[in-house]
Length: 117
Image 1 (cartoon, rainbow, N blue to C red):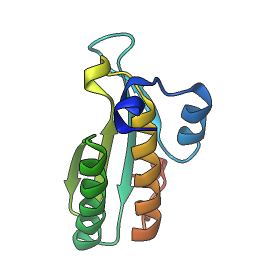
Image 2: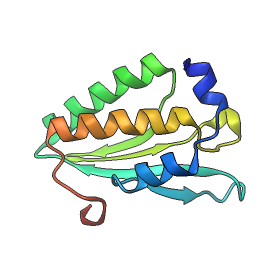
Image 3: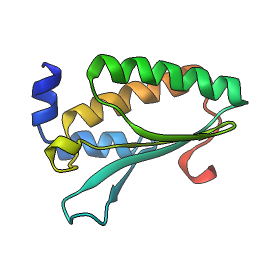
């Protein structure tokens, strides 16, 4: 499926269940009752490891033309995903990028589970 098609397709309940069991949480934003984000916090050994992880995510995001809202403080990285041009709803594109981010985090040595950060 093309990136444009993924952007138009609402994330399925089964895909959202799968992604939330892998450490992401679904947050309803205050802007609208239907506006949602996927959120996850990551912790790495040090700043260099966190930055390397962010670099991989940036390249994948650019390739998908889907860019996260994120922050970094030393070894911690927080990421939010939503599809703004679809009314800040969760789409298949959010799930695809979250799945790739999980893979990168595992390869980079993510130290934290959601509750620990």
